[in-house]
Image 1 (cartoon, rainbow, N blue to C red):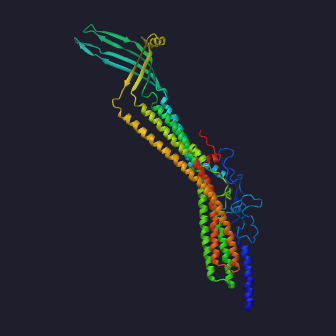
Image 2: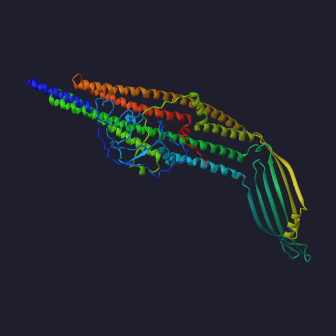
Image 3: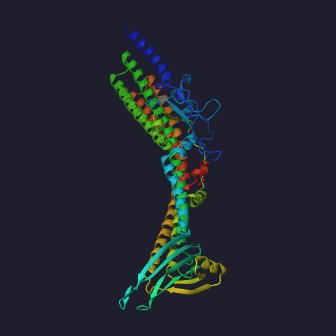
Length: 591
């Protein structure tokens, strides 16, 4: 009877070993019958280069078909190395999803409605609907309106006035006889149009005409006589004033215009900087979402391995070949794996929402949709890095650096104006016109038209401040401000070079890490497979197997983390260079 029990235990152990070999590939079941949401046909495309944005995968951008019912590969003796439903490469060697996933099932905790989107799709959505871009897009328009408004200093001003004057004076009494007061009235009309020209000349075209009339009384006693009068006179003239020193090279109007032009250029660079920032954020968020989805799969695989180990050890406890204490270790491992899976699913939802927030200005429309990236990060494309070339790009393409140079230029314009204000006012003045007169308005207009009564005057005016303290100290302040801006510019240039250098080293390090973590994952899979086989024949312990499972899970997560880091390092390098838009073939035209 005892020998029969030993024989039965041996047979069950053998079956358990076969089951162990055949069930290492069991994946944690997820909901796979959720319908896939096709890309929205009404998505607005951004007007960019025809070769717009392509994901850095080495393949053409194609919409991935979501195949929730894709069959899992047949299990075999080496199934523990690559999880079920996943393979490193497809049969013809084409790169597929991490561990070979072409069809992504809806992860646990995600909405069933999924929208397959390439990186290009995400960028197009962001360029149209991202709030930061929409806000910054108004800045060049505001600057353009301000520039146009600054030319208002050259707008001519037209004035027209007319008045009627009435005066009664001299009412008196002579020898008991009242003498009426003198009465005078005048109709006066004036018009002029004047303004400023771009070289500082001020002009004023004037025209005046008046018609005095009335009655004067003279004499005394009974010899008082009245003398009525009425006549008309007028003139047309032009007054010109040209500065020769102060306000000659530059005046306040020209200063305003030049600063407005400078601000327009700066706002265009600010818009370009916002485009780079937003595109970089979308790219990083896109790769983070891929990482989060792959990390969920890794945690699902870890839970499946832990659950399989628990099931098998429970069978061993039932036949008496394993202690109950070892099962408790398995249960602890299952609980830990579930907690890790929940955390990974929460991170996936968070990354989904973060990307949605970058893509839309109506979050409620996207709330019930999940984003399924069509791009993959299965391998790290080799890229040659040239620090000198990257420095050259950074010095010529970084928007913040170009803005700093524009700030130096603007301060130079201000210094030029304030330096000109140190000079005394020396102005040439001149007037030329024609006058006329007569009994009626027509007589006056006739003489003016005939030009029979010309007049002119010319001269100069000098105005010299005795101390000019304010102007001299303003120039000194401008010089110090310019020196400060130049130092800040040099500091920024150095920071750009350091940032690019660090970004290049980060990308090189991330590339090397990809290969290292991939090898670590392969060795961890092989080590776990070997240890599970040893455990099946009683030559290992539950603790060792669980430890290797944890090591494999960590190595798988680290591999996809290093892949995401490499892609994000390339994105960061482009941002440091200022070449993000060119890298993604995005053209910005400010109209």
